[in-house]
Length: 194
Image (cartoon, rainbow, N blue to C red; front, side, top):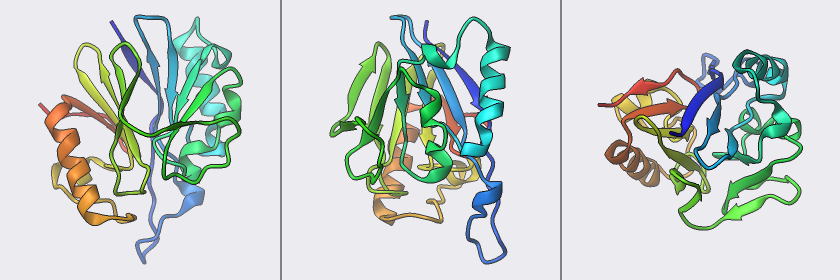
C-alpha cells in the first residue's frame, strides 16, 4: 500500500495588512512511498527548512534524500521550492503555466499518473499552474499545496488570499472535495474530510 509521511508541517504568517511574511512562512513537505518502489517528495518547503527536512528523513529511517526519484512542486512560489537541490537524483515535475527556473523540470500539461495510485491533478486558481497530488493509500489523500493553504480555506470554501483566478480557485476546491478523504494543505496540518 502507498504511504504518506509529512516531512515538515507548513506554517503561514501574515502581516497586519494581510500580506505573507515570507521570513516566517514555509510550506508543508510530504513524502510518498509507493507500492511500485517510487519515493516522491511533494513540495520542498523554504530553504531555511533544509535541516528539519533532513532530520525528518533520519526519523523515518532507512530512506535518504538521495533515494527520492521524483519531486512534485504544487507551484513555484519560493516557500514551496527552496530545497529542490537536496534531491539530486529526482526528476522534478512542474505544471504548465508555472514560472520556475528549475533545470530539466518535467512540464505537466494534463492530469497524469506518475506512479501506481499517485496522480497529478491540475488545481489552478492560486496560480495558473497549481496542481495537487491525489494519492490512493489507506484512504484517498490530496496533497493540495496552496489550493487550500489552511484547513479553513477548505472547510469554509475560502479561496486563497493570493490567487490569479477566483473562479478557478473555487472550482479547484470543489474538485478536491469530490475526491479526497484526507487533505494535506500547503501551510497547515492534514485533516479528514470524511
